[in-house]
Image (cartoon, rainbow, N blue to C red; front, side):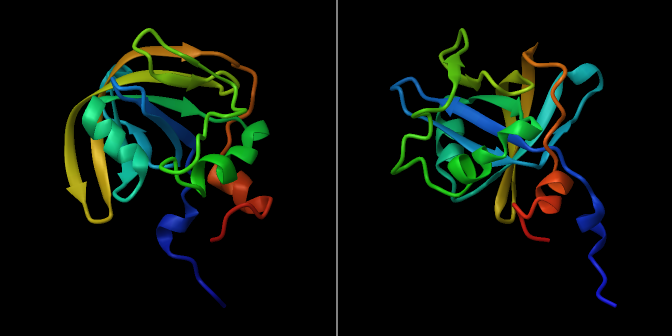
Length: 159
């Protein structure tokens, strides 16, 4: 009998991290390792893969939005997670708007948290960004949350 590793039993929510710099460069990716890290939703910790374009922009701007994805947004796994924003405009044909800081958010997401990076920690192949939550916006409260279990059940991710 094949046994899974313990952490494979965890069912993570799926997010898109969106960011932009002062010179207009922007990107979006897929992230599952996002967690509240202070009472009252004051801080979030976001793990970003060290080779992604998104991490370069977050380091430069210190700004990001954490977009909570809905089950009807599975197409974004390919669009935002499996191609590089260095060579492709991920926002082309992607419903989005800009917040008051000029950072994109996904208008079809369940909602988003506006964040400002207050610290970071290197962690092997990812960097953990501790972010102050400046504002939380709920756009579609009745949509079901996209999770890793949902993606696995529909053959969209391995493991």
